[in-house]
Image 1 (tube, rainbow, N blue to C red):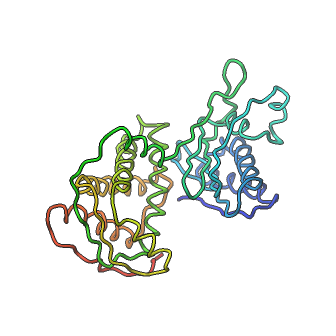
Image 2: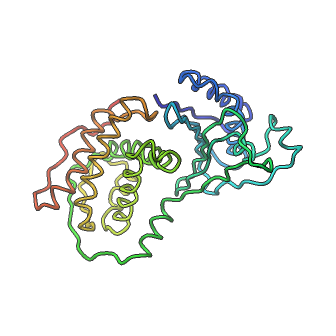
Image 3: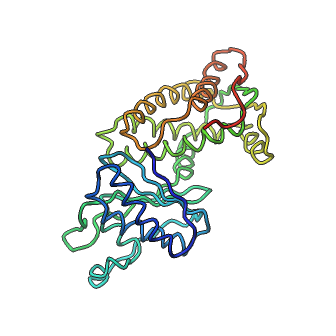
Length: 309
C-alpha cells in the first residue's frame, strides 16, 4: 500500500517524517534501510520547510525491492548538490543538505512540474561513495515539459487531425484519475530509469506517456477541462482536435495501464490500484479516442459525478 503523510511547515515535522518513514519501511520488512531513510528524509523535509510553502507531502513509492522516499513541495526551483568536506561527512547525523541524501542513496533525483517538484531517493544500506570519498550519484532533474518541447522542436508536427468529443465528462472524477495517473507515470519512469531491465513494462509506459503529452501539446480544446475545473463544474461537454496518432496512442496507453493494475495488485508497485469508478472512467476516456478515430459516434459518460472512495 502506498504510504503518504502531509506535514506542517514546522521544525517538529522533521521528527514526524523520520518516525513515519521508519514505520513504513518496517511494514515492508525493509528495516535495513531505516537509518539511511531517516537521514535522507530529514534533509529533504528541512529543505522544504525552509524554501517552500505548504503543503509538504512525504510519500513512499517504488517496490519492496526498491523502495523510494519522495518529498513533494510547491517550489519549482530544482535541488542543487554541493561538495561536502570531510568534517561535514563526519557530522552527517546533523545534516548537510543534499550531500547527505546523495551519500546514503542508491540513486536520487528530482522531477519538476508547473505545480512544484518532487525530490526522491532510494535509501542504501550504507553510505555510497566513490574512490575519493564523494557521493557516487549526482542526481537527475527531470522536467517532462522540457523533454516534450525538445522532441517537438526536433520534428515537424503532422497535419492530420481528428475531432474527439467527450460528452458528460465527469470533471471531479477525472481530476482524481489524473492525480493517480501522474503518480503512476512518475513511478514507472523512475523504475525504467533505475531498474529498467527488471521492469520492462515501465519503459514502454514511460515512452507512451511522453507521446501522450506531445499530442496534448499539439491539440486544441484541451483547455476546456481546466476551465471546468476552475469553475467548479461537475460535468462538461468537451471537444478536442488532436493529432490523428492519438487514435492509436490512447488505446495503447489503456492496454498498458491494465498491466499496471496487475502490477499493483501483486504489490510489486507500492502505488494503489485505481478504484472501480476510476477504472470505468479510464476505459471510457481513453477508449473514446480509438472509437472516434475509427469514425464511431461519441458515447457519453454514464457513470457518476461524485468521486467514490
